[in-house]
Amino acid sequence: MQPSGPFFSAAMTVVVAVLCAAPAAAQPADYADFAGVWHEDDWRSIEIGPNTVTQVTPNGRWEADATTCTAAFEHQFTTRTRADLVEFLGLDNTEPYSQLTDDDGAPMGDRILAAWPAGDGPVKTLWSYCAAETHGGSLFFLTGDGQLSAIRYGDGIAEIAHYSRDVPAPSHDTLSDFEKRQVQAELQQRSFYGGAIDGLFGPGTEAAIRAYQQSIGAEATGILTRAQVQTLLYGG
Image (cartoon, rainbow, N blue to C red; front, side, top):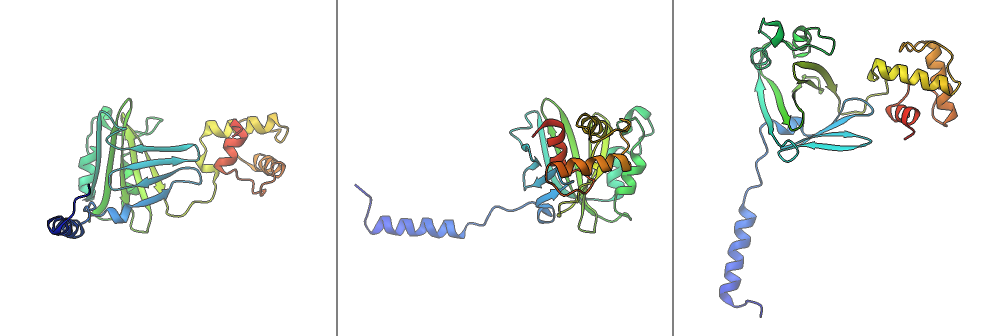
């Protein structure tokens, strides 16, 4: 038997009114400036949500949140000054073992400060940290020209990444030296390339790439897209 009668109708009216009057969940301060999809290159993107950062490639999505980051998770929108950045990342620490370096062991402090917007005014940032089997953090910051950059690091190793709302054009620069040598070796295996396997993409390598692109019916630009790299090296 369904409930009915004046009392039930009045009660439902009150419930509906309360639900309609309830404010929407508040978004974090400055979230709107970061929200949505940002492209690192023509292969990798991130999607920033109010409580997540999702890594996106053609192979899938990986969402960093309190569920996937089982040991610790932080997702904090805040403003920072240059002095705050120096303190937060320990860039003023003179102990060599405490300094952030790149993969080759070279100090990253000067490069990080060069990437930070000029002046000591407030900069909008997002600190995203994930700890599970591995751990690492990214300090995303708006550069003032409609672009987004990030200082990504873990275990003292740091790198600087740049993002755009638009998908960047393919570039040789998105390939590591190892990948470049892999590309040359595969092009050589397919008889498109006869030069040295040295990771240097000169006219010979670019001509071989154009020949490969023509062979698969793609525009012969001489610059591989990430999808073409995937197909060339791994067949998919």
